[in-house]
Image 1: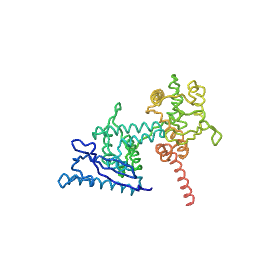
Image 2 (image 1 turned 90 degrees about the vertical axis):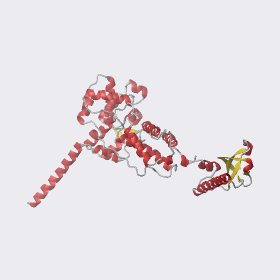
Image 3 (image 1 turned 135 degrees about the horizontal axis):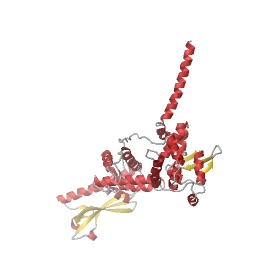
Length: 417
């Protein structure tokens, strides 16, 4: 990039606005005939100012100190100009002034970053993900207010200690209305979101070094609950008197046989039912969370539920495959469903997706690569979490191994005879 062809600095006083013969001193930066003035927060008697030399007259201590300060200002401005040349930046008088006053990109604050990140993800991230970031941002602001006694900090002030202090704050924080303080994995999720924002600022060159470079997340291993074959059957076959609970059960069972998440089920229409590679009906949609394309062959039990609601008054109004219900109400009503069906587990709608991955597919021999594809996972390692908890699959695989080993042993015995 071509740098500026002209650059000059002038130290001057604003004699026209002098009060009691005291005038304010300014530094004027000129780049390619464009000017920017900087108030140096110093005043001088107009009779003590040498206009031709842009310095204080005389050799008194005050004059020497002021002239030394003015020399430092000029040196600093020259250095900023040279740094911009070295970085091949487009140089302007306003930019030099901004950097001198500490208003450049290196002086961006944490709130500046949060605001920029929020605008960046708006319309590109799923609504649930955006809400999660908003919660994290709220905790950051609480931390700054309660522990740092401030409302903002410069990004250049962020360091490893800041991360550790924020982590400790989250571990001790007890959200209003919650039965307990934040768990380890929840804390890690909030810090990971902060890390993604900080990484963005590093990539934007708002900070020179990443404070997270030595930080490692520590997650506790969790057990992903799912329904066994008997539990799923109990829910499927229970006859609810309440039409409300009947609809909730049907949505849950549909997810158990398709692996489709709540938000994506609510968006399904007849347009998502298309012939697959085998000529049978498939559900083809995109995950709202990751925008990943998902293609799921429709099993008989899922097709039955689609047919059941095809002429339902609510779906005729919305044009969706199933009646619309909020996620909050859905999970609340599922507690009633579990109670009636005799399910002791904490039934949530997301458990249906876990049940599809384990009881319906992996346990029945569907390859993990196929399950991963139907779930819309971008990494097969995500799907492998489900495979770890299937004891029946482990048992089946070991029985196959026993048969192989027994056959090999029999063959060896026969050869020995």
